[in-house]
Image (cartoon, rainbow, N blue to C red; front, side, top):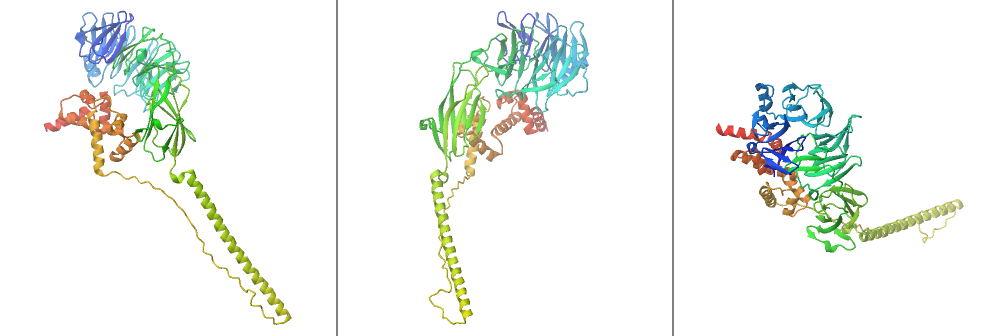
Length: 612
């Protein structure tokens, strides 16, 4: 029912009606009593980035690149609004800043742009908000995140600020690491400020003045969160909706079967007036949450092995007694799972346990487990998954895998080699013993002959010595035959010739360029089309380009955007979507990282060069 499904601002009246600012569709009004939307055609085409109520008949709205206006609810027309004076208004609205007007009290609106102002709606006066020290808010990232009757919370990059409602003064509350960005904050009325960042979930304890993190593998980046005042925290992350039961430290997942299809919730400040409902605005429309909704019933899903691919070929039939044998020199091995459950929309976080001499834990949403680098040995694969209420199913044995060793490492070969070694050692020992014994006999003959000579000399009798008596003991050298058996097996891998590399890159480039604007382009898409494992694709691309797969895709996207910037009249947003970026801001950041300047500046400089 919306004039434009992408919502970027919200304001809920005390009556329960919700004013909605869309991304290009102007202003909409949602009436919960009739469950209907009202469009205001006079506003169509406007990007309404903030909404506040200045009186019963008028709204204060901020329009993208146009400034702040007052919207009459009855006439449905705008009239200009000036921040202090014309000069100040121009600086605050058109010096590269986007002014945001947000309601914090019945008679007070915070206007945050280049500077921050408190506007009294009763006497129509402005007061500049003061800070406890100098802060650099030059990049227009300061915005209001939460407000109640006593205080407000502002966020700026990795910093959180406290605003006292009595004097509207701003002071630093806490800050995180500089590489972490705060995306949303909310207060649960229990001295805890909940914080969502691009690194996950955490909270700041106002009593201990310490920041704590909540560890979970369900998500790693939060776009919006809000506390409902009833012990639950509602979290939007990676197009999914979760609720966090604070006392139980437990997450619940909500999906299409509960009324929440995949939707990227965009941050939009809102001051709650109804504790029974929460409204969220996203790229796919409006979400209305009943905060009294109970936890869903949990059904244990059934996990089973649907297929197993060895070197790309199905081999499920080769499994005997839940065991499969794999040669040591295999290239790829992947296990494909199926999860049977009544809720077909449930997204599962799987825990794989690879058990051998040690245990390895892998957590992923991917129902395919790739095992491309197992050494010779026995492995047992276990699997479990999360349920809707945040718990995990008991681990179940999926399959036993025996990776057979090369022939020179097999038990029979090692046994034969050991027997031959024992025989060779015994033979060498025997020969050595025989030689030593003959040497000892020779020495004894010399000793006896010496005694006999002494006796004959003392008696001065010449007694001929029997020629049969040996005077020396000669030892013959017996030839020793030593057998050394060595077995080596070497495996050499050679790079394909340049022609094959060129064909590989050409095919990869064609797949990326033809599917760049679609949603299906991913590493999995490429591995399926190229008939390669994830590891093989990564290694091949890394070898030929020096880049990872995602970085290489990003590079091709930027190169295509360069062509579109210089050869077409498409605007930045159109080019962003054309080359596969969902968000123009992320496109600009990626373009600047590779080309050293923003797309806008690149386009301007190319136009300037053409004119010259």
